[in-house]
Length: 286
Image 1 (cartoon, rainbow, N blue to C red):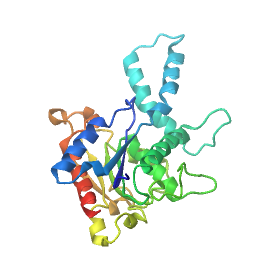
Image 2 (image 1 turned 60 degrees about the horizontal axis):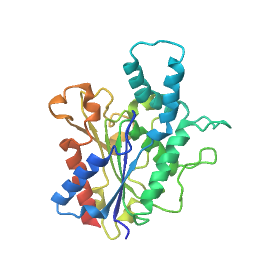
Image 3 (image 1 turned 180 degrees about the vertical axis):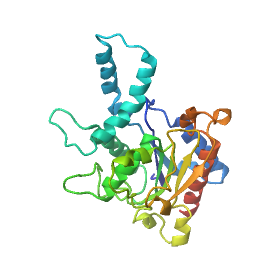
């Protein structure tokens, strides 16, 4: 039986385990139930794209240390696992694929497409699409949605079933970003322009509901901890002030004062509860 809402959760930079979203999903479901809605109506899909780079990063570390003794290997490994993926993704964003190598941009977007295709099998074709993204995952999803919204002959998107409105991001209704570092990547753009949000066909997910009712859930909330040096507000970016609401939080409890808060949004109540509240509102509208 098809579920009513589809939620994708995508991780950011670093060597993330495949089960990175389990704790967040558990808390979201509990919070949705506390608000009187049935969490089983929501289909969750965790987009684990780190697999596209794990072998490459391991090979890089091995090659660099095969004939040289390097100090601070723990820190070097951290740098490779947390920064190399971001550099590789950005650098190859518009480079045509070589015959013997697929660009990282395409490999990661192919992983996103695969997970969205899987999620689409569990929901109605016009179900609301909700995106929850962390760190580099925010930039990845923004690019993926941009490509889906503006396909061109020279830059085709990676959507598998393009005739499916949900899978083609046409019913994109809600976005929640945290630890978002998109402004750093947008430095390479001559002109900054956000994705179309909400998606032009988002209303199709809520038949019979008024624009005012849909506007209550058609929101993009960007959570950031001011101690997180990798997290930035989005409203100052051109065009984003119309579609994004920045919310400052203190992620990580008593450690919220430290830069390590970049990894502490996932189960923090100041992030999870507002997202769950929006999910509950979406269910109530359907």
